[in-house]
Amino acid sequence: MSLEDAKNQIDHAFTRQDLRGPSFENTFGGATSFLRRRYSKDLAGVDLAVTGVPFDQAVTNRSGTRLGPRAIREASALQSPDAPFGWGYDPLSEFAIVDYGDLAFDYAMPAEFPARLHHHISTILAAGAGSVVLGGDHSITLPILQAYAEKHGPLSVLQFDAHSDTWADDNFQRIDHGTFLYKAVKLGYVDPARSVQVGIRTDNPDTLGFHIIDAPRVHALGPAGTVSEIMQVLGTHPTYLTFDIDCLDPAFAPGTGTPVWGGLASWQAAAILRGLAGINLLGGDVVEVSPPFDTTGATAIAAAHVATEIIALWGWTRRAGQGDAE
Image (tube, rainbow, N blue to C red; front, side, top):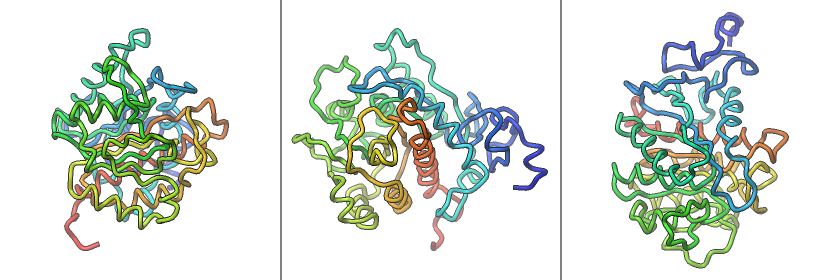
């Protein structure tokens, strides 16, 4: 970053003209959007829309994830001047990416929330863009999966999580962050036989047919072995990636509602995500960041990195020259 760049770039969230390229705005100042992308509701020519869903009314323990999208955006400012490390290409320069802002909803009408989110994501997909969603609790993933499945058919899900979120719940009017994936399977949005859950370390005997690589197995296999096992299950099937930040051990991500010890370290998650380059990724989310329980901001920092890795992973099969030898 040159001094001239730093002096002349300010409030890129509103002032930048080009949807592509890094931002050299001072990381400690200016309006915060995700990676300093331009806020826009205009999806014409947009490849990928980042959007926040500040909803946390479906949690079973500590609330606070409604503040997650704001914290993740702020944490992402540190990454905005550079290409994501270790990928060998810059998705921010190669693709038109916007910050689509947050979903608008009436907090006092939670029953209306799923339909509003479904419409929000469907609008993005109808415009030909993909989505990366900043949560919010994990219940938000169900309406997102609905929108993707309506367009692409039953999906593979790659879930990073301490919890399986497949506890039985046949009341489809309930909104619960621990049962969203059970409902996604029952509603036909997800093919569990082609899906993988990584980092699980809570008991739920009924796996619904998901392939589970629990946290102890991740530690035993290492990132390369974990990636190999994931790839064998996903193949080339259209995949949605959902990353619950509690997949990370509380030492790395204390700011979450249902922390469980024995989780992944940040370096393990980073290595696994980068190793997955080549999967048929349609979109993704990072959820369950609860800033009130983390005075250091480390959890939001981790989530900002995860969202950036999802963007890089999404762009890998769409980048220029992607057929070339690596």
